[in-house]
Length: 281
Length: 122
Image (cartoon, rainbow over all chains, first blue to last red; front, side, top):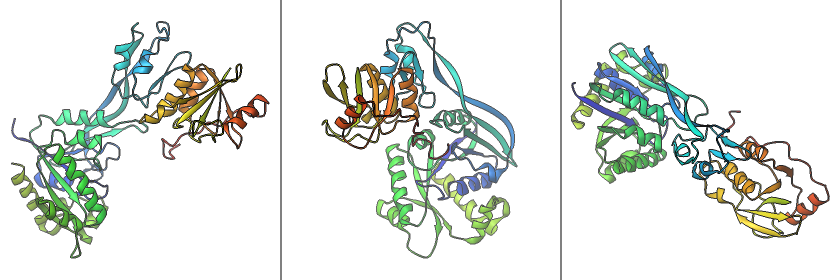
């Protein structure tokens, strides 16, 4: 096995440029993996239009109660901290609230609870030119995409090459799960006060998780850049700048991959790729 | 028979709390001996499933009737299974609502609130 470098691209708010950057870095590198962990709203496939080679369903375990054995002791109901179980005349399960901890089956004194599989989504593996793509999609109404992300990360765990991971927005549990195994984190930020505020939140997260990281400033203009000010104040390394440019905006909004369209002779994303390889070494 | 009402404060003159699952207290009134007790709602601390937790607490308290402004579909599943009847409140205090119930002036609360969990996807 060669190198396995997981580069996670994240940002505190949506629409900042995570997909733009992760898609283009993966395309610039080639022989790489593009991994879409935004399982609630995946959109990397709109750029890569991959040929899907394989699909796997993702399941979690939920309890099933045998009412003939149940004595109505309510141990399971008392145990469930998510309030996924209740008891009127029999045990009632709220499947969409269950977090699959398995505790109810453990505490049941008469073994009336067994665990059964429930499908919550799928992961797919595809190819687009020389880039392998991995993505997941969560079924509507499910409580958490984390089991799908775990499946994705398990799949790429020992793949060789650079693996560019497109993270869900924000700084909640699902993002923590995505960056858990990251070798390097790219924080993308916009030149607005909202951008700077959300950068501050993801910055706290990567610090807390002890991950090496750098910032890419996206949509840069000649005007003030609160995100850049924040980086200077906190002494955060800025590893790249992407201009606020209508040509790039148009390519991107048409689902085109800038690198594959030879945008500005490909200087921008190739130099960013080299920088990422250097700082993540 | 025991009646429960979600209330904003531990006072028979309290208005009813518009939220069932997140009401701070439940007033439990016993029609047989006219006694009453205020219970803290354990569900106020729940991150989710508050209606389910509150409904469970009332079942465990042997409540048979609830008077409330509204309740959600998850709470409804539990209350129906527990054989509890829910009545729509009238404007006024908990005391006035208990009086109205005892005079058969309340209607069964038929519409179940779909909840705020699905953000309009229903």
